[in-house]
Image 1 (tube, protein in one colour):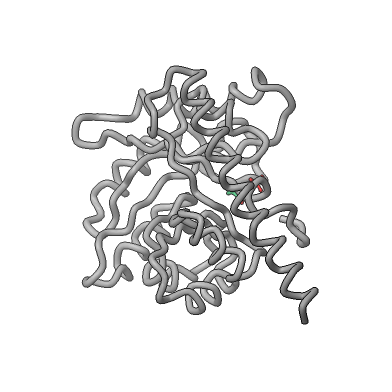
Image 2 (cartoon, helix red, strand yellow; image 1 turned 90 degrees about the vertical axis):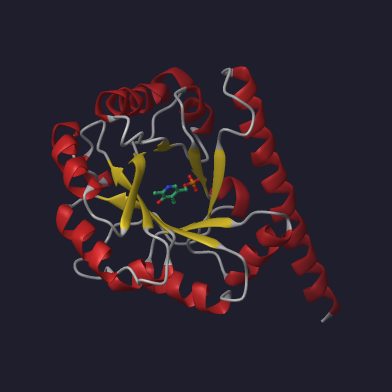
Length: 241
Ligand SMILES: *Cc1c(COP(=O)(O)O)cnc(C)c1O
């Protein structure tokens, strides 16, 4: 019992420490790449990690969490319903399973079809604020990672922007992993340039959701406003994702 409590405390403090390290990395990258202080938000990606790990991050001041698997996410959202958490859905939207997303999340980063956009719009409860959404873009032709091609984006954006229960915030990408900051910057630069082409006064598309544990500096260099970090905060995942 005593050892159990001791081990638990160890794990807990490491999440707090790692969170502080990640926040430090973000602040340093902001400075290094002449981004304004506080312009990059941290989304803590808690997929595969239990509610207890989220609670610990919460206690350390982190309030936005990202989840990829709907069933697992709903379980944790239920367990943590009393906590002040902003939930972001970042996984593939499966078939017609949009209602639970519309009812339980504040953000969806992984929108890639008008059909899903319409369903989320229709299913968003009236007593909740419009659902914040990002359109996921495939910037490097790596099909397995999902998203629409840059060519398709303009048409989709026009259609999504018309839906009153969605608020189109910007673009998201999940490029294939590559080594070295300069290589990592290439797809992120493409996303930033695409945003410049697509934005308008009515639709600033201010959000660029890009950057994970291994490439957050490259993403911040290219204008990320939300970085999605899992491993560096919660440690390695058991299940393959
Ligand atoms: C898992 C995941 C992340 C976090 O990845 P890490 O490398 O663990 O930081 C970010 N974005 C998406 C879409 C993910 O699925």
